[in-house]
Image (cartoon, rainbow, N blue to C red; front, side, top):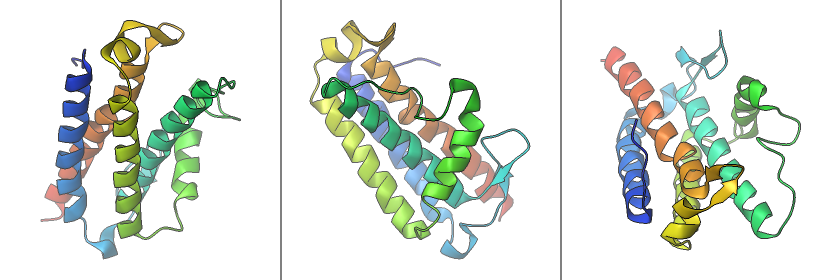
Length: 168
């Protein structure tokens, strides 16, 4: 997998993968959005299209939270307070629950809003801020933003394409 190396490339890949993902998400009928039909994010679990969207929102909002806390000079609990990096399946389950009260259409709107907020972070930063200096350990902010937006959008699109093909 190649990673964006400039602000322009990062913006382009986020926008492109999000647009492609939304095409697949809009193919899912509202009445099928909560059907548990795909492999989940934790081993031996299953999820629905709505869960998949909740997962994307959860990670997008989490990276926004990290950014906002770092901007204020506050300590960031990576990946999230109460979770360790080896507990990402449990964190995925939390995301599913966090957004379970939203309709499928509300989830899609929230995902679009989250993507716009990530784009705003990218647009407000220079190439140097995004790719030329460490942001967390050796990780650059641009790479973190990519790994929590366009990379999972691409993965989610592949899952949905497979599921949508099986429905026809």
